[in-house]
Image (cartoon, rainbow, N blue to C red; front, top):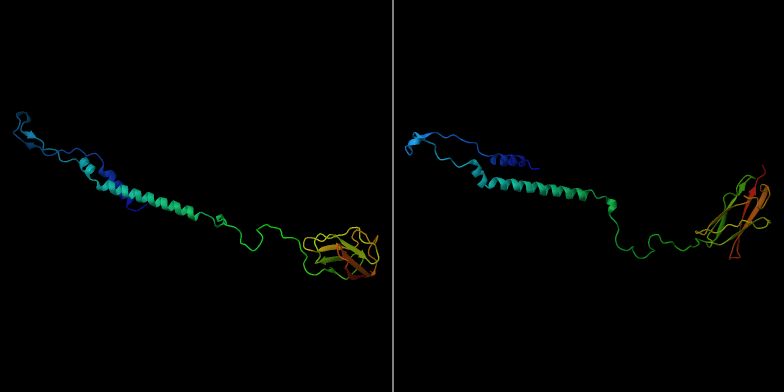
Length: 206
């Protein structure tokens, strides 16, 4: 609120108060025998009337009040604008061309040339030898053999990225116990292809 507003409002209140009666000096007159030669002068213009026709003060008060209301409205609008969070801005329009829309699933595809690897080439009977393959067509079944043993009855399937992982003899599918000491060979064949991939490892004697 402007600093002059309280002073103007108080001035306006003081100017609209009813006038206090004033006793003027008694004048002698010979107009009437009953007045004993005494009469009062005509009353001066009342303060109320003067304040009533003085339009300057009310106009100034109204102008100040309007300015206060306008300033309050501006402050309120500024608060609303500043109160908005940056996260409220939502993107508009269509996604840029040249690629799939957000959330679209790309078709599966193989990555690189088919290959297999072992997590380690040496170990003992307690080692978990893991054969991993990459670059295969997704969804294909993988045939795994260890040495001359029959193929594993638990063939893995190539995942969405063209890869698979398989722990040898984890379910004792090749040997009833631990993999025996000595050199071993694992061969991998993926359904739909005739190519075999091979890798070797050695189990040390404890």
